[in-house]
Amino acid sequence: MRKRSARPADVSGRRHLRTVAPSVILIVLFVRSTLGGIPVAAPGAPRCRELPRPTTIQHETGVACPPRSFAVVFGYRPILVSTPAGWRYTRPSSAGGGCSGPMSDRGPFWSFGDACRAHDFGYDLVRLGIGDRGAADLLLYRDMRRTCATSDPVTDWACRTLADSAHAVLWVGEASPGFEPGG
Image (tube, rainbow, N blue to C red; front, side, top):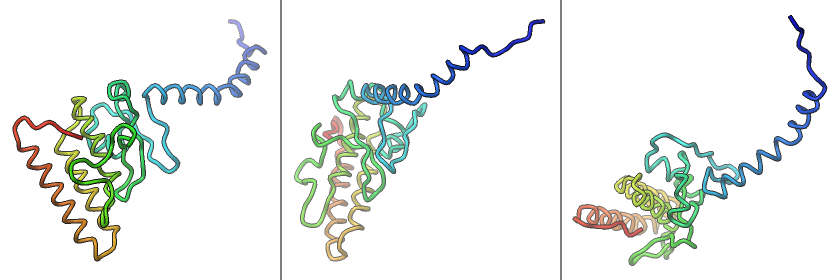
């Protein structure tokens, strides 16, 4: 039986891999994130995971990564941002993300921009066939209410009333036959 011994080429090859591997890993992560794979997380952000059957809430809260085909289909990459309600993937303003209808992102007693942009991302998941509209609407309502809780106690009531009204409009819209999510 022959005795195996490490060849000098193997040793130098391992040393070479130790110095090259971090660079290669960074390049792979950059290319993968650029092409719509796992996004690069902001400092302090949770690291998303590729789950077999993620829920809308898992997608919106950053637990699950956006689907690989998402950027190709919708033309934007969701952005993970820290909000008063926690971490949320959002549709960027540059891709049309934000509050719609008679309500703007900000007003004298509310700031719902992040909540609306996360809701827009949730509706894009619905359009992709993997999201649940009711879950996206409920998370929007909860996020709006959490945002109101950070406001001045005098304006908190008005903020909550606006959030309740928005929730009622979405609920009526869901009950209407043929209603298409507007984002």
